Length: 385
Image (cartoon, rainbow, N blue to C red; front, side, top):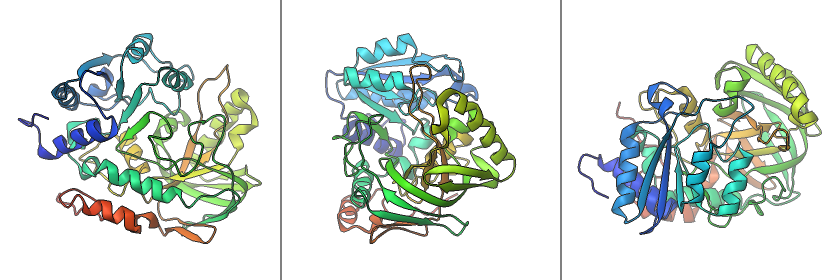
């Protein structure tokens, strides 16, 4: 891409996103979405420079970028895919989504439309010029994809698993089959993004959801994914941990302080919409990115900061609830509980050792890292600030 006025690191990140994640080709129609509120302190964190750089790089590849800035007020429990955005999606080959609110995971309408139209949907997390210039965004997409794949090979149906943590967490259970009708793009745990459809996060962020059965024990956590924390009414980083007691894959007790009480009220409210499934405890997965660690200076927006950290290769999370959407409530409620120093054993394989994802030690992963000697890789990048 043209590099005049663009830091080398940001140019590397954008090239990687467009060439290896979105796979933009000459002549394609590429729509780039962002929210105006994100420029002025809203939840949809973004800056104009990042969007300009991405559009310029798309144009440089002979494709046709269309940038759409929307001002879409949030209506809790009545979220929507704006008609103008939907129309643009239907007319494009690649959609680069810089939205915090309009996301594939939560909005059933977006999922169904993307499945129908088959356009490539890239969720860009590096939404500012500063974030594009971080080691997190510059880590090779090929490398993080391989980490995700190698970690997935551990999971097989009916294997026992055990999760412990120094915070008091101790859970046990068994692995269920990967396929679920609510998530038909995951036909196997060992699946690459290109095999599972055309939804591609950049930078890559989490392993496919692992379905569980016969789960019992205690789960202790002090943070959660930030999309739903807003509607629970708490920060994604807690002052006091929440303690969840699980029996036969059901939440039986929630204990703690302010955050625990807020979660109980929220689940009680959501039970009226979605039934007892809001108390299910049957899904676990984890981040896969070894460099998903940015400073507050690089990302002062607390919602995005937690979103990035959620994808770090040390971050294991469970789903608190996650009942299927309904016709009356076409959204996927999947609040998470996140821990950072867990030890996870699946069958005879030690997948996590006190926060270290052992797939990082895989010889295939290390061989790919060696292909990029001048790029961030598996080892932590020293801080320079």
